[in-house]
Image 1 (cartoon, rainbow, N blue to C red):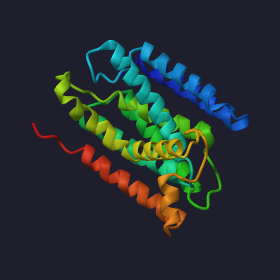
Image 2: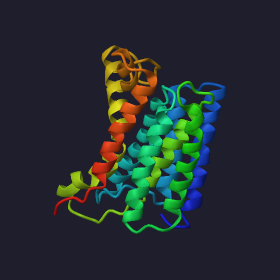
Image 3: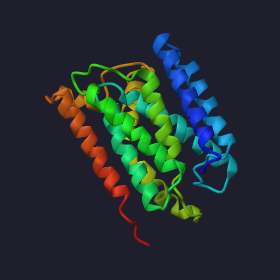
Image 4: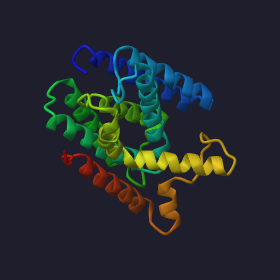
Amino acid sequence: LGLTAAPVLLVGAAAMFLVGLVDDLNPLKPATKLVFEIAIASFLVFFGFRLGWTQSLTLDTLLTLLWIVGFTNAFNLLDNMDGLCAGLGIIAGSGVLAVLWLNGARGPEPTHVALLLGSLAGFLVFNFNPASIFMGDSGSLFIGFNLAVLGLSIDRPTIASSELLSIMAGPALILMVPILDTTLVTLSRWNSGRSAAQGGRDHSSHRLVAIGLSERSADQKSTRLNSSHVSESRMPSSA
């Protein structure tokens, strides 16, 4: 990303925070919030933030928009239990920071991730069950947006489309729990005739509580699962 792109990321993150704050104070319609999220993601794409998964500019633009908006909302959906979103944010952010550092990044990207991790760690102390503070949509959208965009800064060599899966594997493993939880919730709500944006107690964390785990135990199970995927994402791939 570099120093010139850092202000763009900060402006985008601030805008996403404001969208969440407005939604906290006066709930927005899901479609309205989605339009704002796409607009912010498009702002970053305009300034060169891209996945680089394909040589087609149009397809890569659409995939990048889906990546940013999708993961931003994935963390928004994860904010359904005390400590869960912040805990998974720390795990995923640690994975992003490790990959950046191992790839030789020493600029604003790892610094940004480190600051995000520090703020999440301080927040999590007071957000464990029973929580005394809550992040709301402003916090969860901010976390998801930052991690999604910082994942774009991971260097990927230009390789053949037949190796697309190997390019996608690292970032996907780092954010595996948000991916699986969002997919599960979306499909289950569509199957029951409900909107995916409608709230409910059908998240993976709620299902763990339903089978007898405490909320704290459910949080720990989810974070441990994501930790294992982060470890796998850092393993060198075979040639």
